[in-house]
Length: 270
Image (cartoon, rainbow, N blue to C red; front, top):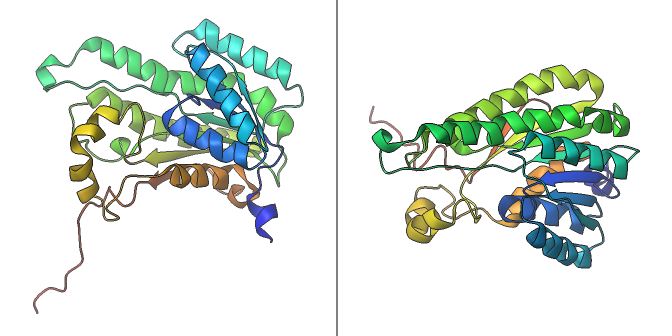
């Protein structure tokens, strides 16, 4: 029942897609600072290599870059094959964080290609990569220490977004339900599947919005602030540790209460 036993990820092996920046980097940092070996992947080889070197220095965990464009099925297959070659004993954690968004000024101008791009990366490739890595996840799993798949969704998959991003919101809602479907099918194989639905965090995807609207966005969150790296890392560390071993098929908002906005309870006049 001690904290180190319940919440340790020391010596676990994790793959974090999109781990070179934004929310993926927040998660990778949390795992590495707590002794995990983390593989990070994205399209940008030079960025990955630089980030991996920096993260390994902070230790005590290790960071390894594996470049991959997850829009490509062939590259996704190559990533899964290479990871299983490097880790023949399996992996403990898969964080499906890579994603894309697409916004327009109005519904009329929203393009058809946005749906193909976003559903491929935000939903289809999450399934593909999880499917390909099932042998590796099963190898490392036990009933008391299941392997963990963590899908990074969005509160925009739980509520109507402020901006014109219909394909993004719909893809994240689909990812949340895919999480439940996978959890129902993989729980008996000692693999838990859960999702985190982040609110506003400092990331490449949110940069333009926060640069212009951060004060407005923060004012609508009950906690009156944007999420921090610690907020995101802690949620993933919980799900990947013994403490989260009996949590399966849930979507956890990490949003400071932004889904409920500024609603306050008031006593009605009787």
